[in-house]
Image (cartoon, rainbow, N blue to C red):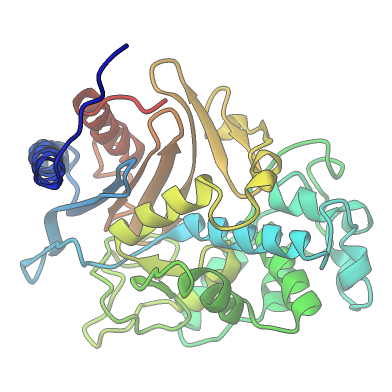
Length: 390
């Protein structure tokens, strides 16, 4: 028989302080290594600026920044700088949709004609009668992109103050021949999430951004995540889209008066969010750890179809890109593009760590390193420093 040992309160306090200090020292060393890595990648990749957010297994947030928020005016990037998320905004739409499914507002197998069939324009959508809500969410509907249509980008640039209605955007794909039958192929399109949000608004009687605020941003304390629903976005850093780009035609996307050269409002539920990178990383960890909706529904969201245009063996679920790494295992996340900005967000369940990286350029002609490469280099540094969580 082993005689029990008793630890005094003072001993417990000492142990707590010791381990807290050890963890703090470890995280400080990690942050310094990550900062050095980000600085080197910012220079090597020819990025104007880079921001990264990392959320560790214990929910400690590491935020780092490098480079310039405004190269012309010599304004440094900071960890409180805001950038456009682009298509990463679909992750919020998907999470709210999963909440609505749990509430019985609609189901994944519902035909969209049940909700939108009464509109005069409905049958002009490609594959209109055969599309389900699930097909919208995983981009297997056969509806094409409207946002890169030449007619649309010309109209967007020519009318920078225009406030776009969803039906006006859908009109750019009316009467077009679908590339495949509904459910029999994969083709990424913001248009799917525009249609999805129209249904979400109809079944709830609420505007999307109101749902976002009350269902996601407020309860999860994402105070540095905001709708990009107007031309003047407080805190947004200068973005560089490259000369002669299709969205506005000039490199700097924010004019001297502080207004975006096009109206970001058009993106709506195809993206529609700007934020700090650390807030985005927080969202990624909460989302893929099942905090945003019933965790029993995570396998449904993460059940993907092959999406080869995103990479070999890459899959797309319900608003989530699913990647497989031989070394680091599976990851869940999303990529984002908006003129002047690019974003990557990933969560690695093997390590219980979320990463987000944003840059204030979308000019592929000058970038020497991809944003995803930056994220993976930061992930490598992090994983080498911290023990894997089983």
